[in-house]
Length: 120
Image 1 (tube, rainbow, N blue to C red):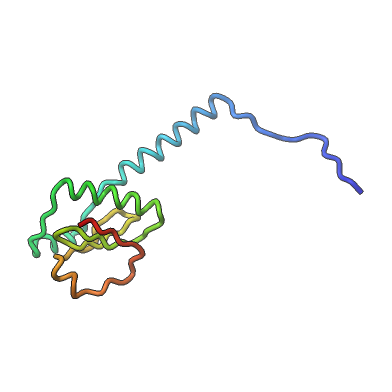
Image 2: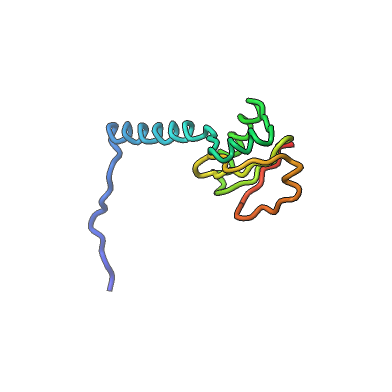
């Protein structure tokens, strides 16, 4: 027994559909760019102040770029080591969860992270 296929059903992409697809892509790209801005939780802000940790704008920009890359690779929570500090950052919300200086970080055990970024 053989089955005969009489016709195929396909949908042609029309210019108006293409325009909508392009707009959807632009919206997704814009959302990604907007969401790449790093936020600092209240807890992390308090820790940065308490521990006298200051990072330059260039360091924050580098961290943002690395977190965008990490998020694309599926990282959810990351330990980020910079010259002066160790930060725990939630990649999904792009938020610094906590911060400590490098000396304090030496005595800590970091759990529930699935990525590490070393930026010394």
